[in-house]
Amino acid sequence: MKISILKFCILFAFYFLFVLNFPLITGYLEIEKLIHIKDYLEFILVLFNIFLVIFLALYLIFFPYLTKTILIILLFLSSLSYYAISNYNVDLNNADLLRGFFSTTFVEASSFLTLKIFITFLLTFIIPSIFVISFKIIYPKINHFILQKIILCIIIICFSLITLLNHQIYASFAAQTKTSDMIAKNFIPLNYLHGLKRLIKTSIKKNNKENFITYISSRTNLLKNENKKTIFIFILGESARAKNFSLNGYSRETNPLLKTQNIFNFNNFYSCGTITNISLPCMFSSYSRKEYSLDKYDNTENLLETVAKNDFKVEWYDNGMGSQGVTRNVKETILGDFYSSNYDDVLLKALPSKQKLESEKKDLFIVLHQRGSHGPDYNNRYPKEFQKFLPVCNNVTLKSCSTESIINSYDNSILYTDYIINYTISYLKELGNESYQTTMLYTSDHGESLGEYGLYMHGEPYFVAPVDQKHIPFIIWLSDSMKQRKKLDEKCLKDRLKNSFSHDNIYHTILDFLEIKSSSFKSDLSILTNCATSVS
Image (cartoon, rainbow, N blue to C red; front, top):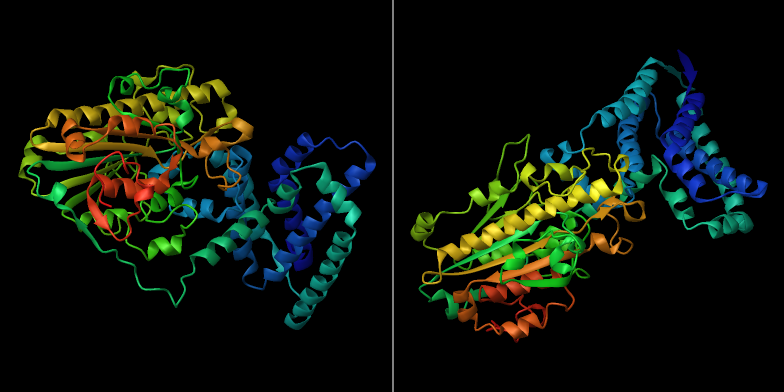
């Protein structure tokens, strides 16, 4: 089937705008009630301008022998974008979200593999790609082709400038709706291309990078010369939001075991990011959320590296979620096989036996990285005996489930996390106080949206993300021997339970617990300051 390159670009610009962006257009029309003819004309004009932008972009990047390959790649990415937007309302302009996508493990990605995504892939990628291959594209001579590109570029830019300068049209359109920015930025393929551009820009390494920053640190005699072995277990949760912990006043009993433990539950704690690939490096870095950047993190010693070089054996056990580069110089053990994940009790089975501990010469710092409450398949995060709240959502397309069933599934996963944390505390208790001084700390990488404001899961830009994606649990438990060693003032610490803290405090609080004096340590960011013996 023969077709000119001009008609070819018009055809697929139309496909991108009105087929792949159909959910966006209809969603806008559902939100905004266009009453007057002028309203519809303004909306049509905006769509026409977007059509011209897509058409021009295609025409500029298409060249003989490359057109079909480029278009098939765009169709593949656009098909994924269509599914993500229509089912999860994700913002593909967000470079951090795209970075998280590229760092996703197979186990995590497999949660999204359903019949629906294969059908979507067939209709929006496979079939259009067959049409692309079947076309025989006719090109003008190369010099005429380049000239056409220049002329079309000038014409379309001039037309767009004329309409943009007509302030009344765009001012009235923007005044009608807060979603005008969404309309301008979130059309496929412009959205993910813009996001990829930002991702590439932020990922390029500078040639004049500063030397790697290594902190001067040492353990004080307080713990180092003690005959008792120090064991610190850091349970790193996934997608757990504080709102659904009964410890924080939630109406459902999701923490029946932890409520019986003598824990310190901080109910006003917030994450560094709304996505794992930001939160993990950030919380293990010496930088605050406002100071943090990936470039700084890559060039600075992190918490695990500082702990490891101060006579601690550091071990990271991961249930398929990935460490996001945090374990770059320490031992990481991936539990389960490449194609599947286990329930989080596999982490508990990895805890060393008392016999093994006795033979270990060094103190231990252990991280247990959960699957936790990672969606969208919350119902797969816990064994059946923890399915207390019914009915549950069994569909990874969360929009297909009722709000009640989504929350039920999620709450069951929190109930299971309650068991995981409680088991760890019991494990440390059984070690006793005569030979061990132990601590357990639990928090999550970020929170989760369960349909509020039409949002699901997480990953919204931090400054606009709802509080449920940032407000997370933070729990500390100490053995009696550790309390004695730290000369802990329990009343002092309990008085801080409602104070506002965040991932910014984790780095410094852990160094304080472990009595590691470092040039990076900031006593004002340690939760223990003035409540226990400090390294400052």
